[in-house]
Length: 277
Image 1: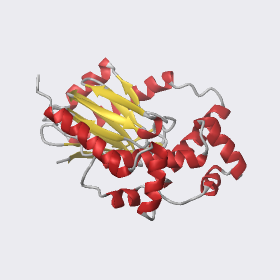
Image 2: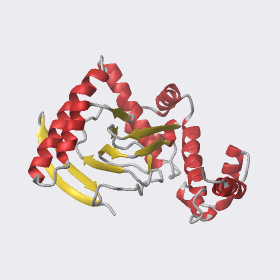
Image 3: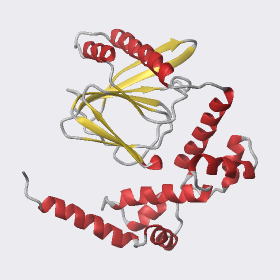
Image 4: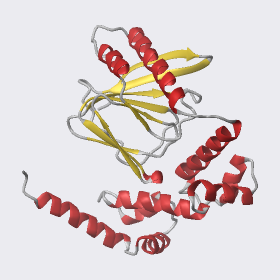
């Protein structure tokens, strides 16, 4: 069960933000976020023991975080988190929109100074204010590290980063609505033609293909959980009828949703039947 460690407000370079820390008693926290989701804040994870896997369906990417490593998950990045049963970690939510605002992908860092600060963070006698100040040291260190790693050499590059983020955010948060490209074009302040060109440039696919991929990837993940009926999955990924979902899924994967679920269950049964080493 997650527990709020503290809420702390601060300001860096005129940017007001809030820190919310959460973990369970003893820091052991098996993730409950194993389905894709997004947040309107930047997440900071630090592992003391064990590991966690963070998957980004939209980028077809998976990152493994190990003990002693720091991970930053940008706000509005569609992701899922899975941890082993022995994991010990602490997580922070950073609500400032501009703090690490140029990030558009997960970053994993191993830094001795930050590890030493986080070790002090665990001292039980520390007050909430002291913990907040320690984490401010971590944020300042991360800000310096990232300013060296991220090259924003021109206004044009910065503008393209923002445009790409807006498109990714729109796909991640609006894929289940039956909206055309006009809604995205309005966010970018571009014509529909310009928006189609930009989407193709950044992702190598057209808008409809990105929406379909997002829906199908989430559907495939949900099929692994038998608590979701096929009709419920169809609804969750944006289809008004099961027949529409059936046609889209079968056309995309070459098998029906029910056949895919059977395949996935057979794999699970096979793994469970294997002798333990």
